Length: 215
Picture 1 (cartoon, rainbow, N blue to C red):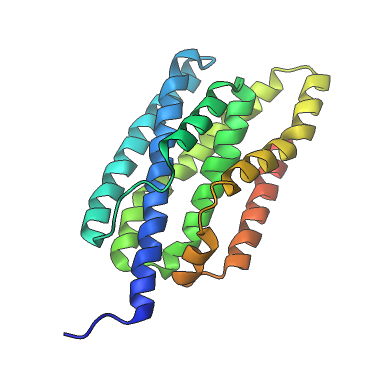
Picture 2 (picture 1 turned 135 degrees about the vertical axis):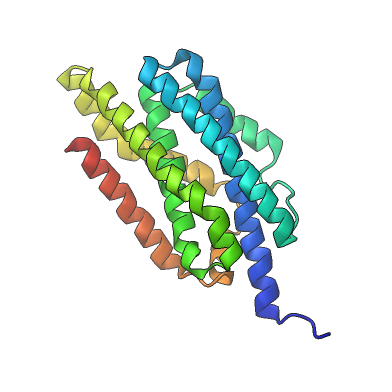
C-alpha cells in the first residue's frame, strides 16, 4: 500500500490542529459563560448564557467524536496556565467589556475564521462544523443584542466613551490571542486557505459588527 502524499498528510495534520483548537475554544467559552450566569444582569441575559453553555457542550461532544474518527491527536494546544490567564481576564471584566471581548472577538472573529476553511474541508469535517457554526450565529446575535441594551442604559457621555474605545479593546484581545504563538497561518495555508484573504475577511467582519453596534 502506498503512503499518502505529503499534501494529504499536511492537510490532515493542519486540519486536525485547527479542529483541536476550535474545540478548546468552545470548551473555554462554555466555562466562562457558565461562570457568568449568576451575575448576569437580568433574566434574558442569564437564560441566553445558559443556552450557550448547553450549545457549547454539544459542540465539544461533536468535535471530540469527529476528532476520534479523523484519527489525529486531541492533545490540547493551549496549555492550562494560559487558559487560566484568559479565564482570569474574563472574570475581571464588567458586563459590557465581557460582551465586547467574548462576542465581538472570540465568537464573531473565531467563527468567521472557521467559516473560511469549511469550503476547503473534507465532507466529515464540514458536517462536524455545521451545527456549531449555525449556533454561533445565534450566540453573536445574543451578544450584540445584550451589548446594545447595556449601552442604551448609559448616559450619552459614558456611551460615547465606551464605544470610542471598543476598537482598542478588540485590538488588545486580538493581540493577546496572537501571543499564543501557534502556527495558525501555516495550518490555514496547509488546508488550502488564502491566509491574507482570511485576515481581510476578519477585518471586514470587525468593521461590520462595529457599524451595527453604533447604528
